[in-house]
Length: 115
Image (cartoon, rainbow, N blue to C red; front, side):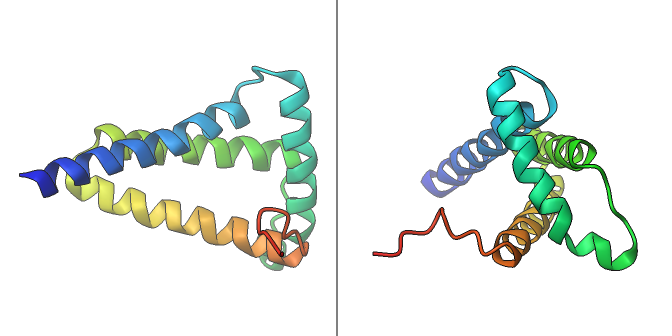
């Protein structure tokens, strides 16, 4: 029982952690934050592995599509059936892998403490 509850709580929290950034990427709530995110995605667009297959999206489309995926996958984690949650986890892992690839390609280690 406790294990089931802990699993449910953790999937809801993880889902919310993807829904909130997804909202920031798709809805222009704060102009300054939106511009900063757009600058980041401009850099991501320049090193994205999608370029290897000939897909070069505009930074805005790239940012908004990532936001939509985060919203869909996060919402699936919060309210979806267990089998859909498994697919959502795979999608989230793919998004994180893509983001990690872009940050390593840009040599952007600002999120990692190097003391």
